[in-house]
Length: 150
Length: 143
Image (cartoon, one colour):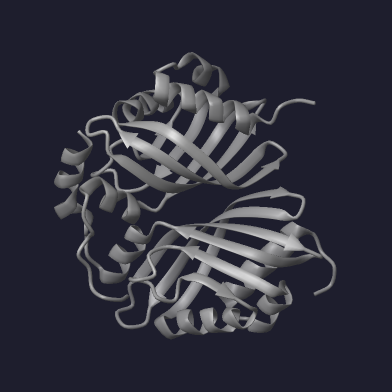
């Protein structure tokens, strides 16, 4: 990828990821790229720590298999040198029932030599799970949690 | 060299939640602060969106009734012009049960004229709910 600012590189990465443009996404990342999604891997086995650029194509393939449309809106971006953090609102349309999943996502990037080396992906996995299942899990648990916190 | 606003806000929140000391928080908040901690408000009424200094202080009072911060580790931090982001691992204690709770939070802040004008916090509430309940949430094997 031609030399660009950390901000431009991260925006190109996000644009490419949601467009399903593997070549563009890979061009934004270092050979030793690592990605860590903070969520329970026993429920989301494709989350957790992944290493190498080849994971990017796999991640896009998994999402494209499950979702017929994917888009995002950038709500917040903070930049300090070679470190960038974003809040995005991701919108994913499920293939099996057409329902749209809306998620607020935080991403933290560390760049080196103009390319992304580390990616930390952070989301509310309970919110994701409820939307994927199409079921409110919080209602039956709410009374117990409120009791436990009282 | 002027201290970044993130550190002042961090100290003010710590004093508000652990000591019930709201004066410092009042001094760092913009009057029209746009405040949101994402999560299920039916379980945790202090989550959700608030607007304005009074509402933000009120919600910190609510948080202070429920938890104490024992320690926190910033796993990642970036300090931009008039904004900052950090990924923080908190060790908390429930004030009612003395139960330890560990939660990771992604925090984003924006400043206007040196005061906090926007706060966004993302939590993984799956983890939080399981710890509050004291047992795992029963779910399908994989999603």
